[in-house]
Length: 116
Image 1 (tube, helix red, strand yellow):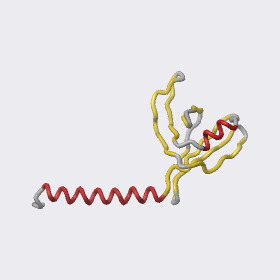
Image 2 (cartoon, one colour):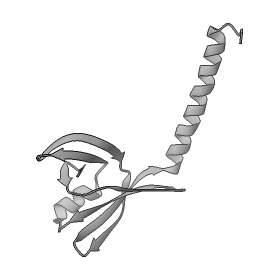
Image 3 (tube, helix red, strand yellow):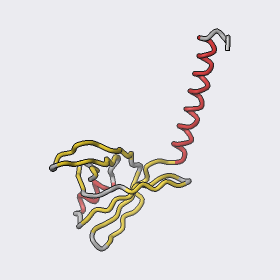
Image 4 (cartoon, one colour):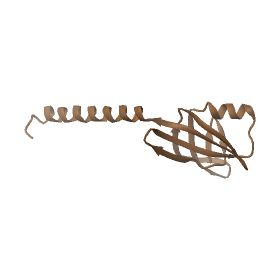
C-alpha cells in the first residue's frame, strides 16, 4: 500500500535510479477522476505503508517527489512516475559530507592535542 497526496492506494512503489536522477513509479488500479489526478501530479511525498485490518501499521519508506515525469494509461489503470532526486542534490550532499568529515578530523586533532 502507498499513501500519496493524503490518499491510500493498493500499490507497490518501483524505484529506478540512474545517472541523471531517480524515479519512483506506481500503478494505480482502476480509473481516477481529474481532481485525484491533479493531486497525484502535484504530490511532494510518497509513503510505502504496511497496512493490517485497514489500519496503517508502519511506514516502510518515504520518498520526496520533485515532480511527475509521466502518466500512462494501461489496461487496468494508470502508471505514474515522479522524479525523487536530482543529481545536483546528490553532489551537494556529497560535498557537504566531505566538508563535515574534514571539520571533524580537524576538531579531533585539536581536542587530541595533535599527539596522533
